[in-house]
Image (cartoon, rainbow, N blue to C red):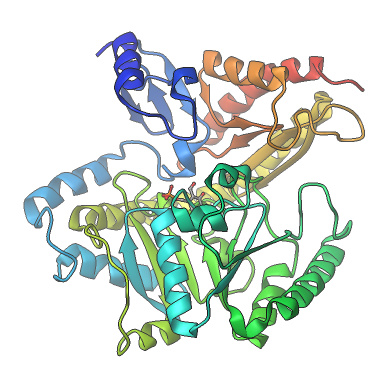
Length: 440
Ligand SMILES: Cc1ncc(COP(=O)(O)O)c(C=O)c1O
């Protein structure tokens, strides 16, 4: 199908997410391979965001494609969740191997939002408490409950939603500061949380959910010592820690899971995206032994038709084997300093570049309006130069997310140094647009 027909039919008959469908300008994609997407007209586009930060092993990996095809022959294509199948059995065992020692049980869903929904349900059933703490700089999914866990503006039009969610400030909020150093932020923020928990009544709080490394809200690793301090604070009050690893899990940060950077094991954690590298829809909740033991003789009041779908489980096994077998997590860790150096080089020559960060291949560059660091576009706002930058990237064959005052640098973990440089060369040229909007 040619690009024009594809776009016209998609816009006429399908609704686009998080958009006014009439205003979207969808990128027509005919195929994808490795770190590249191809339009029907043959334009090659470097995928600098792994689509939705999710195609972690890169596109159309032949071993995974082959494994999915083989699974169609070897396994039942669908059986109901009350059955046992080989892919379900093997994936559960494999996940137990790659997760911390006291996480050995998994509940499969279709994606990240459902994984978070089920993690919250487990926490409520296990503790007998109702309230959940979450943070403002967060996104946890597009379902009713996960929209309320979400702190960012995607929530606003979906309110009031379900009660019982208490949103709290982050150690690194948008503007307000808990301090200038990591030590100050950790200490002050944890003190704030301790007070907040006292006001809410600790005995009413089941869990706190955090993106271990905040994703769409700014690629923000927690300040030094914060996650461990949070773990201890919650433990003192019998509040469970749920880590949302949907975006930062599966090698994105240079380790298999984000929490491995901080010496913390959550009670429950959600995963999706990188679990199958999005080759098929699958999410999961990782459940610690104490909670899994509880559900051995207590009913779990939750389920989904596609729970433990054999094809998706088979895809996840192949993806994890490829990720480990081809050293992709090591590649993400190896390229972290390269990405950071390239960001710093661009910041030195482009006055509009403000903060920039990368943990593994989880990166972001922020654009500023002036030397004081005023964001080029405000929180939840836009600026003509940001819109022009997005157009430039697209015309030059670089796919990434451009939002508010930032753009993302999250390529597939199989990217080579040369391909990474190819992306930054386009960014380098594009930054002239935002430099022109810099007011000094
Ligand atoms: C951190 C995080 N949690 C949850 C989700 C929701 O996942 P899904 O879209 O698969 O439901 C996302 C999606 O972007 C995410 O980034």
